[in-house]
Amino acid sequence: MASMRDIKRRKTSIQGTQQITKAMKLVSTVKLQRARNNAEKSKEFFHCMYDTVTSILQRVGQVDHPYLKSGASEKKAVIVITSNRGLAGGYNSNIVKLITRHPDWKKEDLVIYALGNKGRDALARYGYFIEECNGDIMESPTYADAMALSAELLDSFAKGEIGEIYLAYTAFKNTVSHIPTLMKLLPVEVPPQKDEDHTPKAVMNFEPEETEALDLIIPKYMTSLIYGALMEAVASENGARMQAMDNATSNAEEMISDLALKYNRARQGSITQELTEIIAGAEALG
Amino acid sequence: MADNNSFLLRVITPDRVFYENQVQMVEFDTTEGEIGVLPGHIPMTVIIRPGILTITEAGGDKEAALHAGFAEILPDRVTILAEIIEWPDEIDEERATAALERAKARLREKASTTDLARAELALQRAVARIEVIR
Image 1 (tube, rainbow over the protein chains, first blue to last red):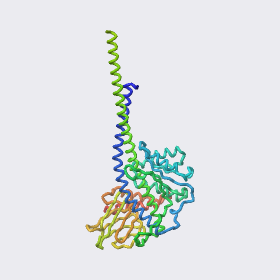
Image 2 (tube, chains in turn brown, green):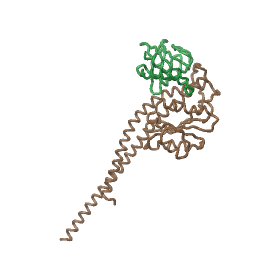
Image 3 (cartoon, one colour):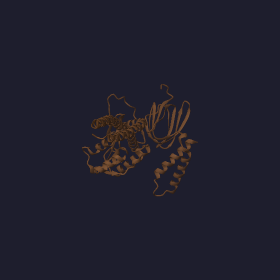
Image 4 (cartoon, rainbow over the protein chains, first blue to last red):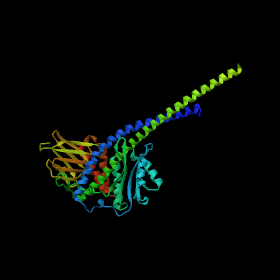
């Protein structure tokens, strides 16, 4: 049986860890609330953007536009959004798995734009090609950050260095459910038109012409998608961390109560032993 | 909603709903020129150029510096998806003036390395900001 001192030391150490996990849980709860508010606010913009782009695309039909068909290059760019910090349960590894276990993707064809150090390090270890990105923006992503990234990607797309652009992030459904999601950004896929139960919309005019408008709107559309994904990813990260820390705290609680029991047993045992020794000693003298 | 003198204007940015109200008229700059929208406008989608957004509502006029985005105009409603927009009291005049000078200098130099289109845009933005404050 472990000595009383050993048990006590272990218990204190676990109590220390528990205090840390408890504090981290509280911090991520607060951060989650803020991130969720931000994510909800950005949703409005994204939905309007999506509706407009969809309606434009449905109206112009299959036009010959560079943004609507794959580039010549086999290369696929993937924006991978993970966190800079760990201790968030499966949050980061789920995203990494999304890339490494994709059935159709070959390692050589991918160019990873990694936002967040954890995803970057993991994918680099697997031997993926990592394009350097500013990982700091994960701390508090702004629209300007999304704009810069989307401009960089569109530039490579226009030059023919990459043929398709994907986005891997964790969608925030609610506080307990976060879904790793892979989304195709470019070429833009035209959603099938729903003719039924659709009130005939007035004919929309464009200034400038449709194709020119597409040139200008699609980069904005992409930026808003990236921004929306960043916002949701931050919310998911904090949600995942909150859950992980909650589990850790209750596990620590369990271990502490187990150790407390062991400690008391050991204490009782040592007292009994001491008494037996004293009595035995007294008898031997007597 | 029933009266024909007003329509619903919504100005949405990535971070917030910037403005949402019934208005009589809205004016702003587009890539094709200035545009003023009254109720019952034909459906149209336009791309925004840096300029001043003027909202005419029941209580009077409101102005804001609108820098980038696009607008969807329908007979009974206008939605402006603004990437960057500011009320006058959110603008830092000193910064805007500095930006104006910088952009002007860059355009004057016309060095081969200067991105003229970008400098031009920066200039337009700075002008819009300063004009809104005044």
